[in-house]
Length: 84
Image (cartoon, rainbow, N blue to C red; front, side):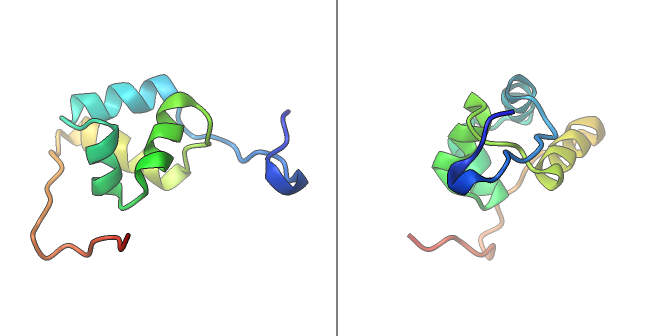
């Protein structure tokens, strides 16, 4: 097992990077729009897609449920945005 920064063990990933890329693609998203939808940074979404960062349980389950239930992501205008 590889070590993450600061000597901590790397967290368990609940979704493989290939599955992340395929799932967001099936939902009509790319890594940038997935980041906006999930309220995460663009670089985090790219790290999920490349396998450089573990995909948390909540993200994996949300994407799987949306795919299974055929729920399309929406971006309502009143949704809170990340500050740059």
